[in-house]
Length: 267
Image 1 (cartoon, rainbow, N blue to C red):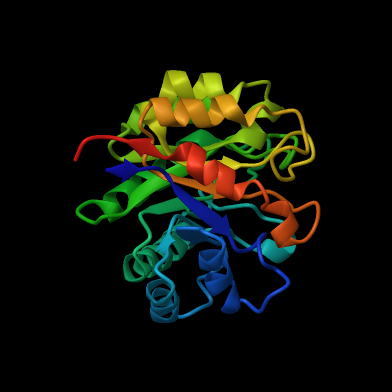
Image 2: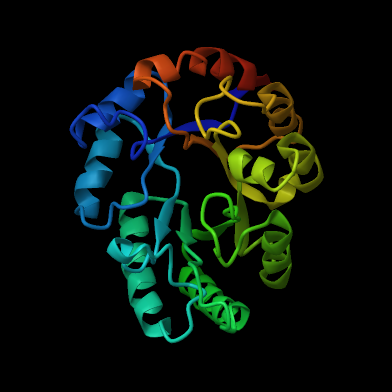
């Protein structure tokens, strides 16, 4: 029996040369199993579910509770005084995730004021989110986003993310490992996976330092794939890089990665 991780196309980055609804078909055509996109709540979830079913795709994960994107906000979960706004946004996203069959919701932590008690607010909001998903197939996902990308982000290192997860438990909350953000904080992604595989629900792939496709930077992805395979990772591997060329040219590695990720086991 062949088993492997799902490969997920971030259709906010991939296939941008196409109209939005055509990106689903394009992702399936080149061999993706799933899609993800952070800003889908303006679409009818039933329409998204229909596109997924038509093209035999899964919805890998959904970010939520961004705040005011026009003002540069990167999330609400750690922002004092915004708890009611966070809850409303989260509830809306959970309804969307359940309709679209998304297994993970990622409440964005955001950039709190430097003098704020951000951790207690963050924990309060994560507790609300975990309580809200209890009894559903949806789990909470959190991601460490490096200072290099988002200065002042409330959750900027994998060590912080592990601490949060230890408070709530891996059964309730899982981590999104991004190879770019890990490398930006001097973490070797492959070694981190080997030591923390049970913590991971989702993986994002981007090279470092340019955050483009594999092969454009300094990350050796062979050990990353080997670590995921060795530890039986069955979640989604999402490609959240900025293409250095058009979508097709930036995905020439995909077929080899699919073959590399396959494992054989007795049925």
